[in-house]
Image (cartoon, rainbow, N blue to C red):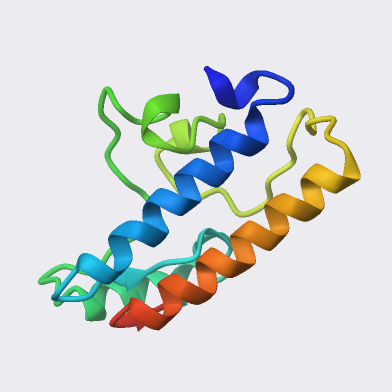
Length: 126
């Protein structure tokens, strides 16, 4: 898993964000961009907004069904929080990665750039 190897985590993160940035302009029907921090910090409002944007018959709730891919590193979030079956608001991470300040700054820059691009192409930003 390259995202767990020192020196490879930043490249992996950048590749994932660049892949998303490349896909965004090709989606003719648009997409809903849901920021993870919003779903965690403003759960009810974000889920209501997302339910409306997706024209769902039943509104989304903070509880969700898990399957074999939930928490799988190859599919995104693999933290212990994702495996609870509900949105966890008060997250206390057991360990923080030890990365040089320059890597953290570069990751933030790539994230900011990607979010701007995705926001410009999204039909809805939550």
